[in-house]
Image (cartoon, rainbow, N blue to C red; front, side):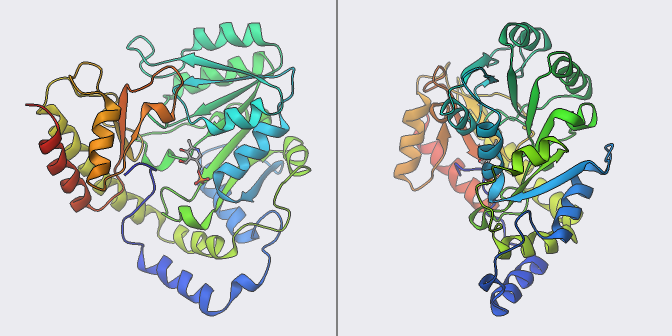
Length: 350
Ligand SMILES: Cc1ncc(COP(=O)(O)O)c(C=O)c1O
């Protein structure tokens, strides 16, 4: 319960598509370099249903969202770049960018004033100081489950435009949010939106994702595409099938995972000093602050691991917030959540 992967039984239609793809040995082929056309269209429809989609808008299917993040973070960074994100965040793109010589700036958000999000005034100050900059905005935010409302997204888009900043909008957890707004709807020309099939669909091991971006930025990125032989063909076939049932599937998984969030929260509520950070979370996970409890986050995680339950702590997401909070994934069968709660009763002090 630590990777925010989805462990609920696969939809029968997707399972059948996967079995068929294997029986037909579709994997003998390379997929088209930028992805199967049908899938690219479906991703565009999904992400830009409400948005202004122009004939400049394109999709690149990638080996999971992380390949798109690797490509964009690397391609847009050099020693003159300031790469801005929140603290905590999902840290890997910071490494990709730093390896190209960029300066990494992590804006502190773990406090009530920030409400666990980057504030416009904080961003403005940094953008004005930065010069050439890239904003890496994870929304909903792994690890806290916070998400930006429409006014906040509009303001971020307008600050980015004013400062000629490129935005990487990491929307990996979009389908778990109660509402979600796209920066590309307000600033399409310099926004890269990342898309993942790992979490809502549950095919993390098949490495299938995408980026959505307008020309000419798209061509600039594709010029350095690491996987020019196409992404996982079986994953793409599963994703095409999944779009046929996406609405019912997402409703189903959210009802299960929100029930799991509730169950986990009410268990922590029984013990002093364990405080849910954003509840309900807009992700398929819930994070619990442990700073007021007699037990530290890493201690609780270690005890759970001894019972074969893996959860993450803040150490994975921040250099500053060590041993501060637990993060528990909730797209799991309800009996996994029950087992976790049972173990918490054994571990936590009354
Ligand atoms: C914020 C964020 N972005 C990207 C990824 C990677 O997604 P994918 O499995 O599609 O590569 C993750 C995985 O946990 C994530 O949390």
